[in-house]
Length: 431
Image 1 (cartoon, rainbow, N blue to C red):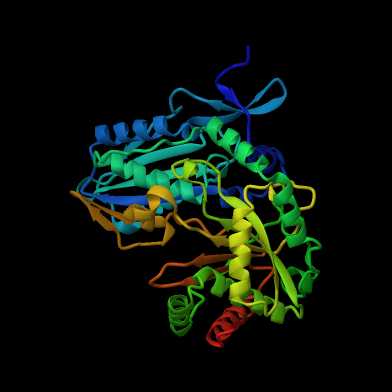
Image 2: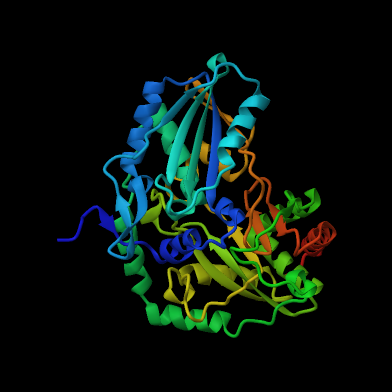
């Protein structure tokens, strides 16, 4: 009889995370890219006993937080432990300045995790006397994604405040079964759609690494990054808001249309393709903690316009999950330079103020009941494994886009030129 504590791994866990952990050529930047760190200052401080109880409730609710990857009879499997192997760590540091507290957090986040670490999720309560506490969470991407950060944060704080956490949280096995079942549904229709949508891939644009004669980025050669945190001008952001109100076109579609037109113009091409990450669409997974974000592809023709792109995004979302665009699919494009992140909270996170602490980069904090929560920087440098990450913030009040580019692929001047082109394209009001 098979060991019931063992469960299969997803393709992503096995072929992306485990293979990277086993490969001695994988650079530290890759592991840092896939280690999620978050920290929240809580004032006044917490009772360690209450924090321990909240941690136990959280890890019992989500078995992915008790998962580790082990080898069994020559195969890599997920072992689901009955209890978290480490528990909440509590450290009393006494009074420290805010700079000293943040330096301590940065030191703790400096060492990345790999998929084969014995503890893939950990949480620490760092105590600073009358100055309050910092709750620090760290997890490896094999059991976590950006959406999971917000779930864990929101639920941890709910447990601390004795606020009921309701709704079913899918287990690791349930997630695998759910995705397998839904991937098979309409399989022929989805395969035909994606074959038509992304084949043949357009030739690479003559910008970035292609123009500089550099090999594609992979897990062995990642480098430092440049960043433009708020690439949209106030005028462009206001224009996006006004156009959304007048036409119903989403900020996502408008910003990505301007991005597509801009890189095509800079690269002397008429078509480009990028990989996108879309927020979870399935209500059944709205409380699941694990790597469940879905990737897909957009092949964009310059000048197509926001309406066309909006329809492509909506149609692509309807064609997920799909084997044709799953990691390792035989016809999926490779060596793509751009990763587009379009997060959209679903389910309980839609109304959770705690999600904003991380998803919107809110440093000012929130007060709930007797406690105040404030995001703390974790200090690690930016890490990406595409030439450029395009992070769209489609909030109704302040739509914007962050551009993060590999330093060897894009100079600061090139990145600023791209931002200028995006702004000009938006203000020109292209269809």
